[in-house]
Amino acid sequence: MRYDLMVAVGIKDADSLAGKLEKFIKDAAAQEVKVEKLGKKTLAYPIAKQLEAEYFLFNFEAPAEAISAITQNLRLERETILRYLLTKVTKVTKGTRGTKGTKELIESEGEKTKETGKVVVKTVVKAGTKVTKGTKGTKGTKVKGKKS
Image 1: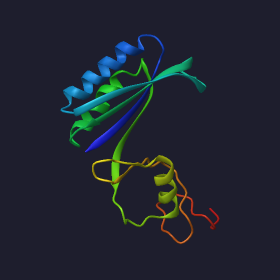
Image 2: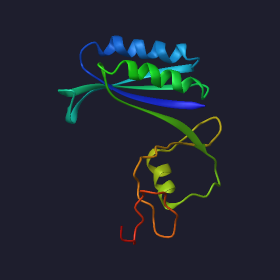
Image 3: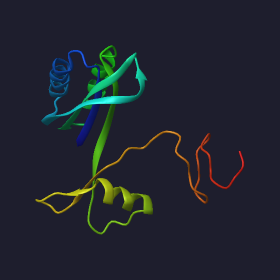
Image 4: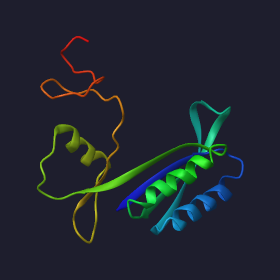
């Protein structure tokens, strides 16, 4: 399975930490590891008394069992990693019907691969999202149109 890992780290020793994270990923039986340095960005709010962070994007292919080892190593680096987001990259084939929100996501973040012609979409599910009227919600989920 294909995964993306976005990491925001403190400015100090950012490049050495990126090398360390790449080693963690490779040690967890990941293949085709690609590292992209996105640069230094100003944070919207201070995190651990930091106003700026260095961003890195890791693309890799790994078995599902390797993800727990990677996240465990990420948690051990709490002092230097400000935030991280690990997402699974899914493929949407041509002719697949989706909801209006899915179509907008494909238009904004999808890109066709040259070899297969399939659209690759990155999906992230946030906790606490609202459910539209007419669909079942889980306990604690707000349903539009009903009073809580």
